[in-house]
Image 1 (cartoon, rainbow, N blue to C red):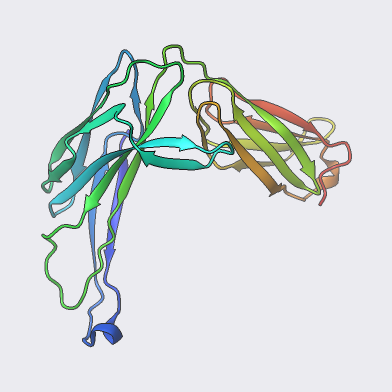
Image 2 (tube, rainbow, N blue to C red; image 1 turned 45 degrees about the vertical axis):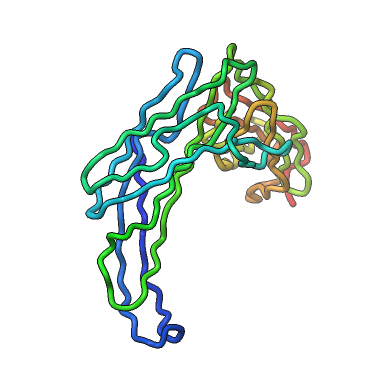
Length: 256
């Protein structure tokens, strides 16, 4: 799967600051990486990625790794990498219309719980941008790819806990009880009548929940159309294996 990343550069009107007329303009570069995630394991200890420059100017990149963890309530934290995963090379120059390879490999022995990192691919300012009249501000992009190091015996499982609805607002926690991450492409929330007819449906944002962590959803306002007819609210994760579900009885409806 190819994921395109567009990097837009704009000219800002700062004539009052620099004391000269500026001409508004724009330049853009386009590049993509042939992956959105990296998976390593005892059987697959290295991965070769390809970075492609489809623009008209040379691009330079700096490669780094960060340890990726989450707080107990599921907020992301990045810290200095511990050397368990390495990338090479750390600097890349990609001429227009060409590709360059980037290798990522694991050095640590297999563990009982999945280790997670972020591979950062940061575009560096290029000295080859044509001169323009006035001042130009370039916006550069940093790609952040999840890197997952599979444990000896992967166990993917999770559950919804502490689900409640108060005054039309939903609160629930998605808890990861396994030793590898959970990635949802959303959580479908459905309100149903006492006959099981769907009264409303909405989808919560996609999330990562790392091993032995959880993600809290708090005070989410539910649709209020026909709220008095809702007798149960169901939650179901999208694109997880296994699918995680729960049902919240609402005998008095969900009106706020």
